[in-house]
Amino acid sequence: MPSPMDIYKLLPKTNCKLCGEQTCMSFAFKLIRKEKKLEDCKPLFSPEFEEQRKKIEEMLKVVEKATETGLVVNEDLCIGCGNCVVVCPVHVYEDPEGAGSGFGVRLDNPILRVENGVVRVVDVGLCRRYKEKTICVACRENCPTSAIAFLEEL
Amino acid sequence: MWVCTGCSCLCDDVEIEGNNVKHACRIGAGIILNRSVARAEPLIEGRKTDMDSAIEKAVEILKDSKGVAIYGLNNSTLEAQRIAIKLAKKLSAYVDNGSKFEKLAEMILNKEIPSTTLENVKDYAYVIFYWGCDVHNSMPRHMSRYTYYPRGKKRQRGYEEDRFLVVVDVRRSHTAMLAKKNAVFIKTDDDRKLVREFVTALEGGIASGDVLRVVKELKKSDFNVIFGGEGLIKGLGNEFEEFVKLVNSVGYFIPADYRTNSMGFFKSIFEAGISKANFEDLLIDETIDTAIIVGDDPLNSMPFEIAKRLVKLKLIVIDPKVSFTSKIADVVIPSAISGVECGGKMLRSDFVEVELKPVFKSEWDDVEILKSILEGL
Image: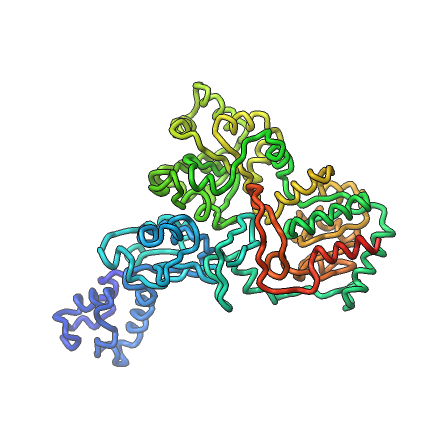
């Protein structure tokens, strides 16, 4: 994951305040947290900053892919073993007879579900990282192929 | 609900909605999603023909042959395997499925080594060994569906507290990477030595730190299980005396053979009273001149030095898909994908019989093809 400093280095660094932030550094922070969009920085879209803008866009690609909880699934690496679905504490609590007992998850809107052989994020609304802001890494810990990652570790 | 025939787990909780396969791993979903890709056609010496003449030609080849081997049958149902064995008896042919588990399977069927079902493992097992197998890749849902991760009747607190995982392997495989908290990975180059070390430690003798830790955990529960793969069989060099002693003091043993119905094959041949041959040895010794390959691809899976000898044989391939072996075959007879286009029964890796639930229909399947060959003879 890119650090705010990496992004700040490529910004115009004029503190022009056009984006509504006091400094370019705070804009960089909010950009990573998805609270601001790159389009808000108007000077960056002028031709003299084009090269830097492209670099930032490249860096932000990882951020774009992540869900609200920072969960990133790389479907190319997933083999669909379903470890993440079965170990998820929320799945065990909500669906003890299904996912908690090793079967396919029976919830209509689970957090993760194996579809067509790879894991898909269906609804992160239930995730403990989203609701309770707990740092839970059960799904990532039990994925030896590294198909699941969290944004802060990338 | 569909029963997946991707590996010997035979997962029966897979849902199919149009083009969406839910809960199956990549192997299982691939069977459904790529069903119509690379389908085989009836061929005689590379030229297109119809089913009846392909079967007639196969019968003709078999009548002229001096030594026949039937290889494969892992992806066929129990019914098809039984007819194949009848055919083998009639031709006095050799049979082989390419698996190395015959001795252990025979011991389990004769009750010389204690075995149990995967449902019992889920409900009661505490220490789970994976010895010489990388199930995360060969049977992806094995751990999440049946063994380490799910919660069972007596194991309600999940894998972090109520299970202990032991992975024994020559390298740090994906399965070994899962050995984290409450788990241990033992790297070994000498399985026999390690088995001996476990046996002495269980009797109160001296052993290395990891072994002693496992033995301490083993004593906490009376239901522990060892899953052994081909690595274990190779490591032990087919000598199981010490290992049987270990299994008796640990608890139970279940083979971790990924081949879909290989346990069914072993049960069928032992019931029929014939022994398994070794196809590789038959090729090296040149004792056969004809081979019937059912649902397998030896040209792809065998070492090149042995596989190149296949060219000298008359080959009859019965397979739903185009394979490397079917490209060099004299006769290709297209069949149905077991469990998808034809029903029947299969045995899971713990010898539990599972009824297949086909979702499509096919005109020909392994049973009918083998039956018509048998009738033709």
